[in-house]
Length: 211
Image (cartoon, rainbow, N blue to C red; front, side):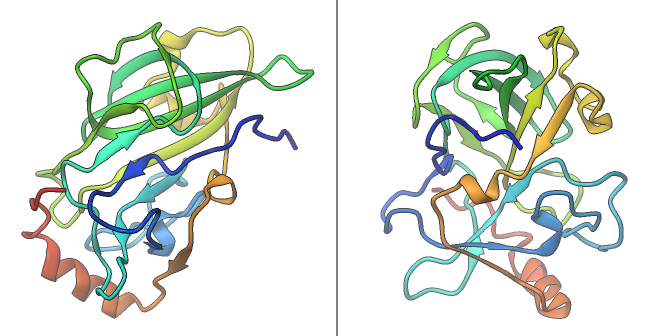
């Protein structure tokens, strides 16, 4: 098992609250899950390639959706290798260099966001640099604003142009790895299915609040 060579930061910056408040995950938001967390539930078309960072619990408050317009930051130093459209917005692909002593390359994806206009392919980026912002999705209904985070190892030969959805779902070029153990966060899993979908129904039309 390869080990990521840098500290890996939470790529969401919450204004006016404690540092890294606890995140809440429906099981379908976790890495390699085969279930959908948005209505009507059921199975995903393919297993989840990363984490959906979607619900936060600030001190003294009930869990709430990550607001649209929340700043998305680079989780570790690297270089932008591609910016591609995805199902819900755009994905920024960042290279973090070769694994120590190996030939595979560490790649992270920040997906379903509105990219910062100053971010371009080929650009070196630092940890916690602004990469973009979360955004509202008009479809499918009931899918809350969120950041999809993936981490993986890219085999040679490298062709960044081939790293695009839906090719990434096939997992033929990029070996995905669970990023959750690397994140310096507190987190819980929301396992009550009925309470979860009741929570979604309350917030479907409320996720346009500013960060």
